[in-house]
Image (cartoon, rainbow, N blue to C red):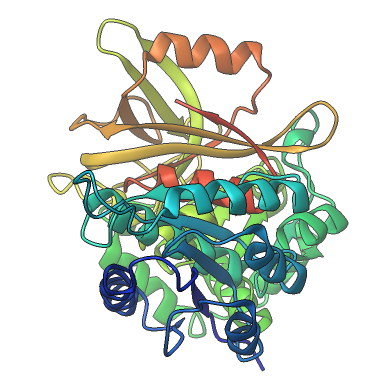
Length: 448
């Protein structure tokens, strides 16, 4: 049975400081955490000695530890937590000294934070998260929210199954993933199937068997009825084959081969099928890019909506923008409202259906990629900005991102650092959550 997510609040301190101040902070912190995550385990009282701490730790099975210095506490407290839960993400939270009046130091929590942090770094070789302030301060709420969201995605990834459908084309090996790498670093299981198996499955469907899938696609797109009948029906056959395959096998993300197989062996592209899957909540990357698909999946879980997948194809230094494009796999829900999710044909092969539209604007956007260093270790590319109100830039689907950082700098540094040519564009401000996830998985971070 799948384990339910649990965050654990660990408020530590000693009874020799000002207990009314500590109690007030404990009560307010508990209420905030209950509000942010109902699945938070909260002790009945402040943990003012290691016996109380250990009795509480006996009752929990955390996916996230929120270790808070109510007052000063020596390193023994953090050591007990780390000894029990070696791989659980930690957010260290330091309370602000409530009063500075020339009198008694009421909490001395910050000194306790240094003690705890020193111990955490000795136990672990990866960064942890930290926040300073009281439960009523905006940055505390923001950090707690991001950390809880990130930890929930990490927890869900332990149950995630992905599937490689076919192999990467020649020269696209950057997207090829080994099942052991995905499992050991991210906790993700990978299946694999040849593209021809789904093609053969699609060929076997009758017109009657695919009518519901065709009807569904017609409702969500503009112009599909104008596609040549054979391509339209073959698209519906592929749609049924892919949708039922992922549902039957519990697949959350797919990296699908596309060209040349679906043009030469089937006569109809898979682009629009992947768009349909993305709208159904299944991250679907083309050109068999598994790390692209996993990047999409993480973005979808954090934002609660479909994400764009594509290449950086144009830099506008004056406008401080980067245009992302691909042949036509963007989810229908991303389309501009004035055009809807238009259907066209592939820009090179001149066979349809593919998606043909510019994406809608968004006040927040994050460019994201799980990449690999030359030594095989993983790294996260994170760049913040916003999606502009721009029409389709080229045949296919596109989105224009105005970046917070200088766009020319981003392009120059990304190229010189050898980043991959595929990116997920997430339409929410989830940059903090992604950086936290990188720390949880021990991945290097490049953030703009």
